[in-house]
Amino acid sequence: MAMTEVDRLADYVVGTDWAQLSRAASEQLAIRVLDTIGVAIAALDAEPTRAVRALTQQLGGTGSATLIGGGAAPPDRAAFYNTALSRYLDFMDSYLAPGETCHPSDNLGAVLAAAESVAASGRDFLTALAVAYQVQTRLSELAPVRARGFDHTVQGAYAVPAGVARALGLSADQTANAIAISGTANNALRVTRTGDLSHWKGLAYPQVAKEGVHAALLARAGITGPRQVFEGNKGFKQTIAGDFEIDWSAEDLEGVTRTIVKKHNAEIHSQTALEAAIEIADRPGFDPARIRQVRVSTFQVAYDIIGGGEEGDKRSIGTKEEADHSLPYLVAVALLDGVVEPAQFAQGRITADDVQSLMQRLEITPDDGFTARFPQEMPSRVEVELDDDTTLTASASSYQGSRSDPLDWESAMQKYTRLVVPFTGPELAAAIADAVRGLPEHPVAALTTLLAKVPTERTA
Image 1 (cartoon, helix red, strand yellow):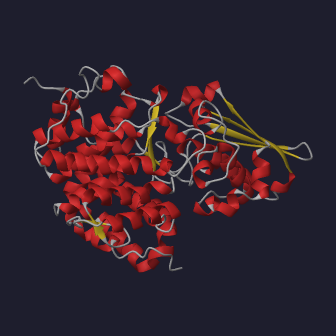
Image 2: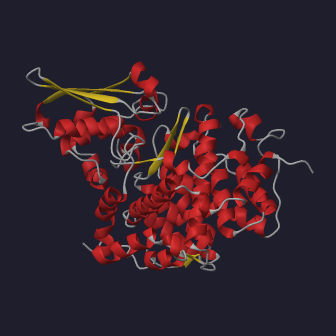
Image 3: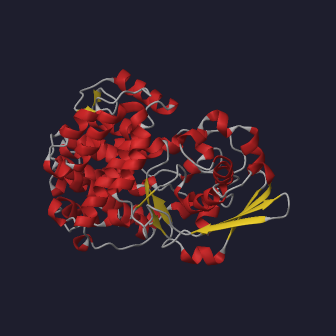
């Protein structure tokens, strides 16, 4: 049988090794693990994640993978729950490509569950996670699907089983079948993130994580999948992505170094607008009660996804899911509160008169010059007109955590500690961070054992 594209991808996956990661890649991978675990722990008491946890426990099954916050479940169900935690706050990392944006940290829950289920080493877990980052970022760059009406989780349907297969130690044949099964079966619609947003915005990738793990388990059991999933008749290229080429034999494991981390708890394309808005809010004597009007200029993708462009109105905001994907809401609350953190998405804050009123006085427009600089930069400008005709202006094109200013361990710890200590207290928080940093020298169980000890309720 002739080699197919998924066979070549599988050969790449099984041929990867920890030693291939550069020092920069291994450092950034550790930072991504820390950051992802931090935002996951901070979502333990959210209503949707509580519901998912209750269902997971009700379904039962063989518990070979740890649930963050205690308990265990089969790897596919643990992947769903733990990914739901890391995705819910919308405070994770991102990869920006001209036609697609994805969140590669969404793969951690699946890869971690698979790695733990086979008592993998920390190095094997990290290598498998790097594989998932590489596959998802490269497909997002070269095979975008958003413009065709599909969700960015579609590329995850290939990234998850690739990373999971590497964590499980599958053969090249099994790996190809896992990717083929998952890629054929999981092609989500972009309506997930348009119009009135639901809980599914935060659960769409957990679904792909669950099914990607299950596909790998099926392949391990001997189930085969369509090996022409990419190039075949009615395959991914013909029906969804269009033609593209990736020489997997030439790929490395450096994709993680091209991802960025959110500084503010908001959709990734809003980050620089929020930098500018908070700069204005922090100026001495600034009084948001005096705001007459706000004008935001940004790049086209930000306008289309969160500014009221092609993905619909963003001023009718009543839920957390709608608020964190609304540039009008995000800039308004940044100007009012001087910060955008999980507290800004409490229901009472979302529906408060001050933020609802200010949203209606925001004008969002795309700027051609800013658009030309994306995705290398994310330029935004905020102009605040006051009641005495004074105009305050601030601009930003990057921030700490963006590609031009990568996050370091110390800064990542500040965000992580702020998010997790209300649940864990300082001692357990520090122990988890130490376990993350020491993963290359320890089994993955050194981390999951600690994650099982995290309380599901805030202790402070």
